[in-house]
Image 1 (cartoon, rainbow, N blue to C red):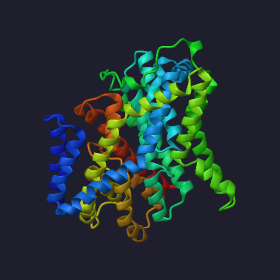
Image 2 (cartoon, rainbow, N blue to C red):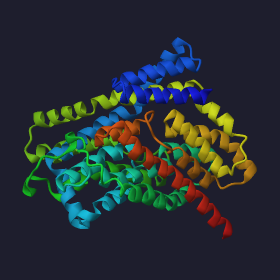
Image 3 (cartoon, one colour):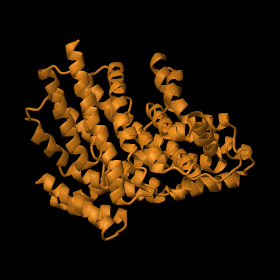
Length: 440
């Protein structure tokens, strides 16, 4: 019954957006209300769930998306993106731009949350695509696959980290196994599948295409790369060094503080305002105007994300994830497959990789004691399952759609399939590594 209601709600949402052409945010609210009542929530509980979903989602991403948009705008308008693009293409050659972005996405994705990495790299992809007449989706999807894999598989990202702690797994070993599994997952979902997308020649969001500047009008290569990579450096230094500092010391607290994504992005915007704005001859009023325009460019995304968060919360409060977990916990499947399958079902129905991963971990924890399976591999199998088939109830779906200016159908055929391949190849990698370790 729960799954039927969820499926009907998802189909209704797709119909309202694609066929009726109702505003996306209003569509989310309408479907959330209908599904919530069908799941047995009282009207007041439904309102509370919707408010909680909107607030919870926006609280966690609004500042990061706004700051990322500001940084992206400064990078694009100053010519820094063009300078980076020229150096990148000069290093690897135009035919290999997608491989360069794929590697960059993996490196950037290790320390950064998905939304931060996306907001930093998507404008670079769009600029390179525009400058060199390449399909933006063709060169961008490998980068997005890398970001997705790191988010779903590898600590210290929220869901893998929470699962790892619940299983008392070893972070170093989990990270080592995860990187091994990540390589084929990225190659299949990003490089191989992405190579089939040349036909998608849609012009990506023009708000992030840098103005056509001569090379001497752009910032230096060092300033361009340093400004873009500054938040990554802060988070990376914090992640690597803070564990070795005395617990509770001033130095550790300082590193942890600047390593927080919101703080690192804020500091990056401040730096970019100087290096890419004031230092380039712009007045403070001109810099402020650019930052304001950047927020306007993504304003509708906030409502879309809030609507997706409301739908996700209604499904969670209505008991959909609990119902799926109860249905699967008596399965005779291999523990890794069971963990992956449970996380995948919850992800498809609820839309949140974090919710699906943590919910699944709660049911799989007792199973670890009775089966003796490797907790490090279990973290990875659940993480892979939590990436399954992102669609209309996932904020990442809408972020991708708006940046690359695709239709609903095109987004399902590209983004959703890519995420599915990330999930399936992740499970295949876990099973292959399990087999290899057993024969040693």
